[in-house]
Image 1 (spheres, rainbow, N blue to C red):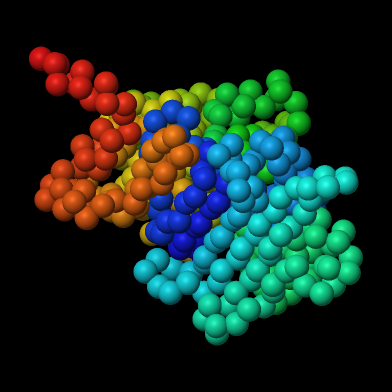
Image 2 (cartoon, rainbow, N blue to C red):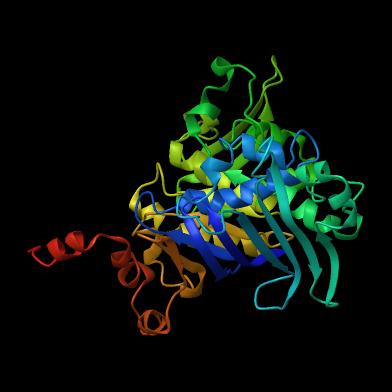
Length: 387
């Protein structure tokens, strides 16, 4: 499944958002416009739906409490509302709608309570869950937990809970992978920085492991042309998992290198491509262009597209970026780009307008049409004086 629509109210710096989405979503905007905050609403739902140590209360606590989540502009109606629609694939009707609203109780213990939790089966035009219900009103403590996080109550919409619980956030830090032995075995929950990347490869069945590495190797040649082969290998003494790559060299088999010898950019690309092939859950990528030179960054969209096309299940990807080089790819569908604009009334999320779409269709790139709109007016004015 993919998220086909998202609507937010009072979430962090977004006072109100209602926007359609595709199977790739590029989030662009100036610094502090809310790109990471937009991704975090999906991580938040993952944490709520996590049956092992997750849940609504912990997800909010981990983010500093309701005052840190709620938009500073929220006044008359201070509740935070998240509404998500899910479809089987892009350009098809939505199948499900999940709505969650919550806020402070406003008296006594100042507990955080659910003001609405609703699940709609849009295909059959049926409301499966609508809270608060009679039981909730008789026992107000029930409103401290969602049905999303409770296996015994989400049977009729468990596929929604599983979809959210399996959201993957990846911001691979190559140094953590290269120096894993020195850093010890500690892992941050959900492994957002890719420390367990090699362990994930090691746990994959041999046939799938070999097939995925072969696919990645073929695609990676676009960016690393002297790489000839990728393989997985365990250290014969310690059993530690390693990735090895054969680089072109005048001596046969002299060019094998381990992951600690790979460039940071190569490791980041490997992590992204493996993750795209690894499952069918939503993937969140923060600035994949980091550590890469511009020539390789220009290939990122094609790499993602190729991996999505070759994967058994097409994985929706949300990508934040500042990169002009990445957005110069003319194969990017302008409808995939969401532009965030900070205003005095909170950050506004813009879909591509018909006027912008016409320019891009006529041959201009997303970078040429949309990126200038993410810069302050003073910066754009200065560009007029460049020689």
